[in-house]
Structures are given as C-alpha cells and as structure tokens.
Image (cartoon, rainbow, N blue to C red):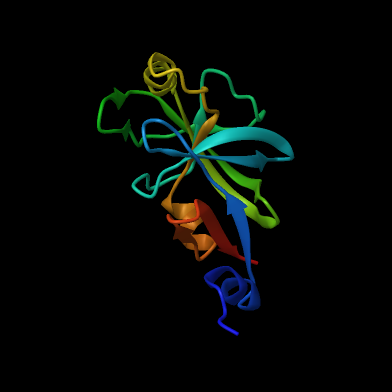
Length: 146
C-alpha cells in the first residue's frame, strides 16, 4: 500500500493544521498566544511573529524595541517586543516565543477592502523554523514537528 504524504509526516512526529486560503492567496491560521485564540496570516517572508500593538488582544507584556518594522507596503515607526510567550498552533506548542508588536491597521485595512476577515497577527519564519514547518500547498495544510 502506498504511503501518503500525510501518513508519512505523522509517522515522523508531525502534526497537521488546516490552512484557510483567502481570495488574496494568503493563508490564515488559528493559533493561541498565552491561551488566547486569534487569527493569523501565515507569512514565510516575515522574519518574526507579530501581533497588533494597538489592540494587544493577548495582553502581552512588552518593552520598547529600537528595531523599526517594515513591510512591502509601509514603514512602522513604533515596535515593541514581548518575550517568553506560549504560542500554540494545533497540538504544537512553543513555551518561549518572542513576539513583535506593531500597528497592523494598514494590513487589516487592506484585508477589509477585499472583504477578508481582519487578523490578530502574523505567524512568521521564526516559528516556522522552530517547528520545522512543512507547508503542503496542494492540501492547504501546515505540518509542525511535535
């Protein structure tokens, strides 16, 4: 019997998480920060995992950061960083994840203009690397190593 990609990755200690593809071809994913649920964009090009500074839904304790956050569309002047947070995606858990906070108004405005649900943050390459991530674009799944 032929082994599927899914069963092979499960046998290697990976867990799968469903990705929701938006009309803009972004993936949205549900995750928890410090046990509070949120909706995130999965962004392999973002170096850090981020949340919205203006809302701070996750009640993060943060300190000012001298690093300026930038994206393809905007330069944000103020950033903060929160260290040692619990981040959970499906069954995968990181107990010491740093998170960058910045004003995500422009991101959610752009999503709103396309009738796409606003997000609470971005899951970046830092978490994807930590979880030894594999993205299955055919099946719209993220695999993280437990």
